[in-house]
Image 1 (cartoon, helix red, strand yellow):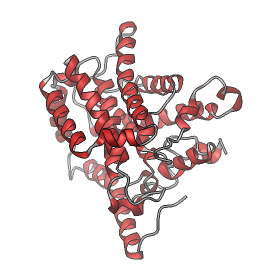
Image 2 (cartoon, one colour; image 1 turned 180 degrees about the horizontal axis):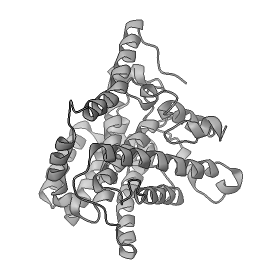
Image 3 (tube, rainbow, N blue to C red; image 1 turned 135 degrees about the vertical axis):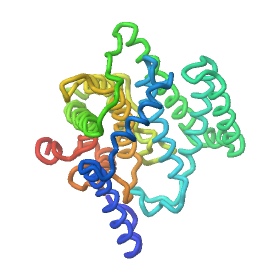
Image 4 (spheres, one colour; image 1 turned 30 degrees about the vertical axis):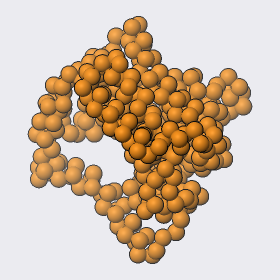
Length: 339
């Protein structure tokens, strides 16, 4: 599976862009290490501002960051599907598909109406403004008519809403029985932040990859509900970014459970820093959505670090074939163990 071919000049430009993005983190960290660009003061100032906000101080803060990160990444790629100019980057060829954008618009109406009703976590003014913007888009675009016109789109949108809110309700119930672990709130050095976030991503991928492999074994597949994640909707006939969160209850609980375990592993002789926990949720959700969105762009993880990240190139094949490429992010287990 590969993307639609572009011009030779376009491919050369994409390769150059990938090289720049690939080197950028190393250049920044190297400049920081030799004192040319000291990042610690900038990080301290940013964290001092963010860490003082009431939103990040609540017991549900990590869950909210994870949920809104999923939502943000899915919205981003769903809107990208509607742009004809990105056609050459798509693994499954199509010029433009606005159905995912209609789904996230109606999905947003349901979510922000709920937050407006409960008044958490942003009070009522912010949800009211965002809800008004969503309603305007839905009415102007005729999104409800689009959903009714395509088989399964109404249920798909409702199910996505229930999964979003169900995750938050589940974490809230979990907190009734288990007090969230305390985490350091003080200033954090860039080196420690990078180490903790990197370790968390690698650990999450390693642990869940074994569970994912087991979900495809005949013996365990009978007792697990992973098959729901591999269902391709009739209205799309391809994998969508929103399919990232299309899980059965047990499958979903295992993913969340692995993430909770990983978030509570300290690697620097102390509990994982709160900022590292937030960034972990943002990066992990981004990598998960990217691997389902079906883009082979110069920004894609498998283009930036080929042979290290599998990205959409491998994961779309996994969904297409129903086997092979069980790792969520990386390649080493698929290449040397699961193969």
